Amino acid sequence: MLGQVKEGSVDPESAILENNAVRVPPPHINPSETLTEGVVEPEAGVLVDVAPRSEHLPVSTLAHGLDRVLFNPGVHWLQDPRSHVYNFTPWLEKIPKVNDFAFERLTGFVKSSRDEDLRALAKQEEKKFAGSTSSMSGMLSHIYFLISEYKDVELSTLSQHFSKEATGFTSGQRIPATVTLNYQDGIYAIDSRSDEYDDPDKNVLTWLGTLLENFLTKTPAQFNKFMRLESAPIEKDEKPMMREAFRFAKSDKFVMRSQLDCQDKRLPGTGVFDIKTRACISIRMDILNYEENAGYMIKSQHGLLESFEREYYDLIRSAFLKYSFQVRIGNMDGVMVAYHNTERIFGFQYISLDEMDERLYGPVPGIGDKVFNKCVGLLEAILEEATKCFPEQSVLCAFETRQPGKGMDVFVQPAEWNEQGEERPLKQLLVRVQNELDGESVRPAAALRSTTQKWTMKYSISEVVLPKDIIKNNLKSLEQRKSRTLVLPTSVALDDAKEYWEKLNYSNQLIAAEDLKEFRPEAFTIATAQVQRYRDLAREGRALYKELERRQAGKPKIVLGQGVYEEEESLFFKDPHSESEMDQELEPSTPRQEQESYAPSEPASAESNLHDKSDEE
Image 1 (cartoon, rainbow, N blue to C red):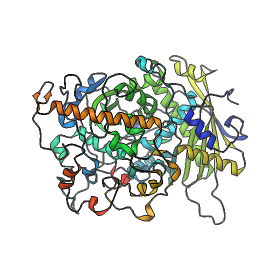
Image 2: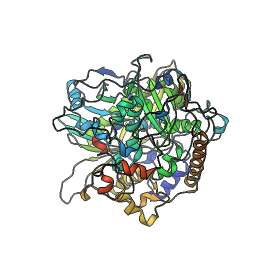
Image 3: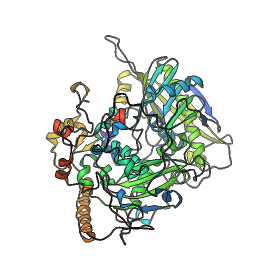
Image 4: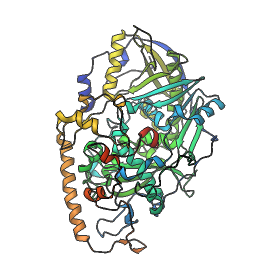
């Protein structure tokens, strides 16, 4: 046994899931047979660049003078709330509607299993596994939870408003990670399976992340060429666009891929950074009701609600861990965050990798790189054992480290199973670790504080020996925790959820009946008291904004350092609620008239036309 185990506390949300789950013995007393044991050395997991095989588009740069954000710490208001002076062009204030943007003109996101360059590089470098940031960050997160035993984040820099707030990771960050290891010619290309639980075609934030990335890196003239009313139709003989810029890197057994969003060569290192778009808490907690919740405003720098500090606090607990993994895979310097409510942008903040590390681990120099290397090294060992369960075939894997982080469950089963009369086989692996400093066993907290001692990590991977029915129930319980509960909009009754969900469509195409995902009535609920509070704040914020607009009507808009702003002709710069005006501008052949829908018809398939964006929770 790799260490003594003690029970930990469980937050209320996890307790609810526990009550609904099948009771099985806790991981530390499950009978198991050891498959392998090993040590992750300090130098494990270090990434080395691999030259791309194909020509790619240049890495984008920020437009609109937003580069100032990169070199000045803290939040930058788009418009100062006290003086009403704009720090950046008012053109950025109102976000265009998703259905007005021609996503089909962008280079589409390609899954790892369909990326021929990625697979070719894995073969060239003689690596067994290939993956992207989106398919790997979930697995790496659960390995960190195991290594650290769910160490709390560091919130000491926040104001006293958050002195009594939770310091652990959010339930969204703890959701199990599910992937497919697609086997071909000795190489496993890893795809995320999150879309089986959270349909991206029905999530407006998935589309909005890609739209806003272009919004912030293109001039008004360039961006308007992607608006549907101005975008030229794609010709049949039109030359395909080059692929987006990626960094490819290799570890001992992996070739990894990371999309490169933006670059400023004045930043340290490569100068590359990621663009992250962060919707306000009212949107994230009540996504289906986003149009009403878009009235929620950020009014101040600090405070529990309606503040940048609130959004930053949530980022630490829900996103910094996966951001830090993505940034390291891409050899980036950090991320630039745009805070918004789906209708308006409130401000911007550049967050370096060093800052993220300090919020996650505390002020320990170099600890972030050590954690990443340990996580990659252990992931390689786990995937080796997982693929041995069903050799030379594609497999489905699910990863979960449950609180208090004493062991990680990994479920493995064949991706395809056609044996008549036989049930698809399933195996459950248990991963445990023991941290050592200079050869002495220590608690995770001590290992994560060390700066000079040699940190090694012993691991054990075992196969759980339990009746098949119990292992099946264990996986079923994991899948229940993976599933996300959605709150219905104010105007939709619980009895109407099925009709609403089937008509909700953010694609520009009719979805064939055979392609519709199974409706799960248990996935929907009505607003809780907390969600209702967010809705009330959104209504109050909408009324306040209208009053502010009335007071400022007719007054010139002043931009810092530029003077009076001259209004530009824009295809989207209009009142977001002026639906009648928008309908008059739509072309007769738009899908709005072809198919009744609860949401505006929007661009084509998320899989084919969206970038690798997983920024929102």
